[in-house]
Structures are given as C-alpha cells and as structure tokens.
Length: 425
Image (cartoon, rainbow, N blue to C red; front, top):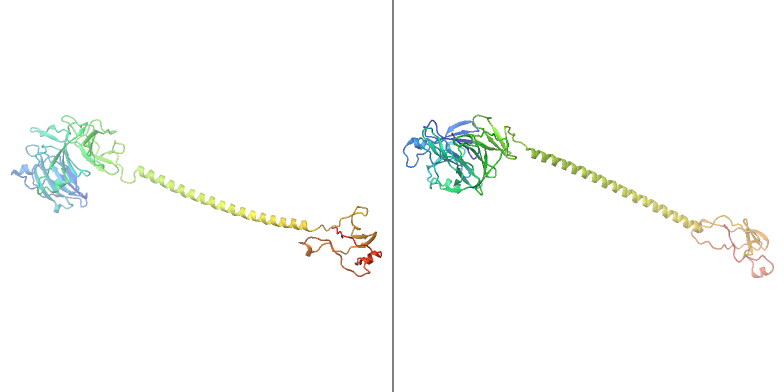
C-alpha cells in the first residue's frame, strides 16, 4: 500500500512506496496545478547498508509532512526481507527540482513497524508515529502481530530540521484511557483542534467497525460513536479532513467511492456538502437581516411618533395662546363694561323718596316742581376709561333756567340747585 502526503502549499501530492520492488526513487510527486506526475530525487544510500534492494524497497511506510519545516517524514514499512524502522526525510518546498533527501537511516528507539500511522500535530509541533504491525509472516507476506496503542512515538520539528547534522531523536509517550485494540490499515486524520481521529482497520481475522479520538494534549484515548457507521467494519481506506468539519473516506474497495463523516453530529453519510455557507451561517444571516429590518422599522415608527407629538404640542401651545388672548380680551371688555355706566336713564317716580331736590323723570329734571330739560352729556368716548363723576352743568346766562345763581339770588326765590346732580343712564 502506497501512502501519500501533500505539500505545505497544497500544490504537490507525494506518493511513497516502491515500484515493482526495484528503482532508486521511493516517491512520486503529483502537481495539482499542472496535473503532471514527476519523480522525486533518488534516495541516498542507507547508512551502513550496501544492498540496493534494502536501501530502496519500501512497502507500506507511514508518511506525513512537517508543515513548519516543509520536510516530509517517511517511516517504517517492509523491505525485501523484513519489517523496517527506516526513517527518510525529504524537503518539499513546492518544486520537484528543489526537492532533496536530507536523511536516510534507522531509528533504534522505535521498533520496526509495517503500515504505521504517521501524522503531524501542529499544536505540538511534532510528528506522531503509532500503531502498525511489528511482525510479518514470511510465507504469506502478511502481518502476524500488530502493535498496541499504549506506546506512542514523537519526533519534534527541531529534530527533523537538524537531521542533516544530527540523527533525529524520537520520544516515547505513554497513552492512557480506554485503548483501541491492535489493528492495521485503519484511517487516521488530524482534526482542527489537533486531536487525532482513527477509524476502522482490521485485526488478523476481520475488519473493525469502531472509531477513536486521541487527545494529543493529555495523550488520552476515548471511543467515538458514529451514527450510520457500517456494521461490517472497514479497513484499507484513507481519511482526509475537508471543509465544514467533514472527513472524507474512500470506504475501502467494496463499497461507495466516497463516504463522509460529519463531525458536527458524528454521522456517517454518502453525501458531501459542497463548500459554501453552512446552514448555521445562513440562519444567522437571515436572523441578522430580520433584526436590522426590524430596527429600521422601529426607528421610523419612533421618529414618526415624535414628530406627531411635537405637532400636537405645537398645536396645543397655539390653542392656549388663542384662549389666553380671548380671555384677556374678554377681561378687558368686562372691565370696560363695569366702568361704562348704563346709557339707559333710570326712571324714578316723583313720589319716590330721594335726598335730592331735583328728581329725574324720563330725561327731564325737576326743581321744586318745575320741569327743566337736562342738557348734561351722559357719556362720551373720552370718558371711557375714567371714573364717572357728578356732572357739573355749564354756566349759562342769567336767563337760562340752568344758570348759576349767587347765594343772594337763591335767597330771592330763584330755583335752588340740587346738592348733587344725579344722572341716570
């Protein structure tokens, strides 16, 4: 089985392994832009080994790209005679002409593994090696024993980057929790949170139908239930992380070409959601539009209400002003009415008791029983705002019945002037 890994710029796809058990180049490169295949540079001879077949034959190694150093890590597999713990490092910078192998050797700290799981963990800046099978049946060329998942191996980015001067250094990690059973040919992929998802695979007798999560911070295993996962098990498949939390699987050799695991609800399906706006995003946008439109309508309603209240307030002020003006006019008229005497002459009978010698009777004035015409003006415009006083008749000549008389004349029998002239209006 030939593993594959993509370059950091996602342009190149490197396919590892060997061709017909011969050849110097254990890797082929596919350019996704030019859609062309090319051959990686020849692998340098393995340290201390002169046999060409042992140097270049690699069946089912594990492979992953260290994104920080742009170095492809290839480990394990089997050569012409046995399972190997060989490690080779290839610089992948986006151009096959610049590719270069920086190391080829064996790691004695890691047991030989056939079809191991090799993944790069971005959060830890480490390449993880685990699983695989550590024994092979020479007669059938099939695994006879597989490794457990309680011991893991990590290779740091710094160790990979300096491998040309110093041999890479592996670190053993002890995992805990409920451990997956030993298996080979499962699929494994790094999730967006840098944890590892592993599914399926097979033991020495049958495929497995389970899934697991490895917490790469605590190095703890936990089982992951997936709805719709084929009950018959699955093995020999690959997994790739796609957009919108979807894991793509080729679903081994017997079933659908592509299957999808939706990590939002951990469901197995045969339908892939085309990249675009997710349902949650669409709902969020719809709600946002509704809120914005509602806010605009509410603002318009409040503005209209304020304008209406302002108009009502203005009209109320005008009404109060008009009322105040009418009230002041009415008060002025009432004051004038109180100050202006009634133009009608008040009738007073001759026999009515009066303290005056002169009595008015229908516009005539009587003095001691004789009637005289009252020429006194009753009201004029010039007297409108003045306090009305007793009218002092003008001084007529001696022959006028209203002429003033001296005290002597009065004593001689002239008509006596009233002590107060009463003008009835």
